Image (cartoon, rainbow, N blue to C red; front, side, top):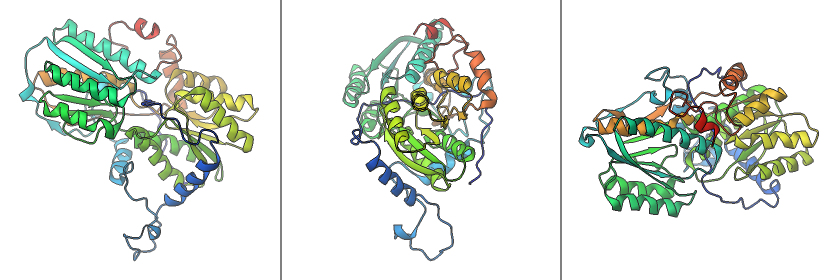
Length: 427
């Protein structure tokens, strides 16, 4: 069994756990096993690492080259960079991870400097899952801080409800208004929103993109935790290290076409392909708890499932309940730092890990906007720390969040903001 490093997390980051963006239903929902298992087996064959023995293999012949080629959702250089960034000490205040940056390349913003009372515009993909709800609450409280200080006047917000066309229209409306002093965009999907973000950049408003990316670098800063490859690798490495060779793993995904989600699965494919685990298949569930439970149950009816890998773990409890309802032993599972999973993890004593997609990142775009208006340098790519919660520090995070609701995220990073803890409790 391949040996992989496992994090013993310190309190530095926040939730991954992700982001559902559209409501595409998987084509194979009627029978979630047969077709996908074949496709997953093919992927595993394609992803088997190059053993380096055949130096004469042609780079032009994919059948002779076992190393996965770059494609729309996998770039080996980015994958290796993100995995390396997990071990880089971030710059910035240790007690404010939302202001930290990993290996930043600073960019001058003096052209955007102006006085206070600025209009800040925000085009949000949605608040359609608990991770986004938690972050949105945190962002509003951060805005309140800068409204009280006079840096922000009006805060204008649009919510696209996971509709690409609506978000494109929302961004154009902000552009046409012509009075945004900065525009924050959290894109619903990657490729489709790229032209709209480019149009915003071309209007000369400083654009801040965060959470999910787009296929342009025109923005002043792109803010995100280390990324999807790192998240997927944290989860996959844990399963490889915790399961015996030959154990079976089921992968549960939300949807296709979102960069951070695609990168999570691509990283998992790399790591599982180099292991002795048997990936039974991957299934799109839309993040719906009932569908997750039904899908896992169907797999359990056909045989053992020893491990669960998820590209977003806010439905992890539903997956666990499928094992309970069918009388099966608990799996090794990678969930996330949503409290419902962490409490279930503690209660059952199962073997688990909580990868994170740092939820405190929702503070950073507001901080970036104020820095830009002050003419301060910001990282062109603002990479925030991202460290999973392990069993070693799980109870500490649960104690800190003991009064928070189950759909809250342990590493939300808003303890010092106005309204804490009430506004997060009263969602």
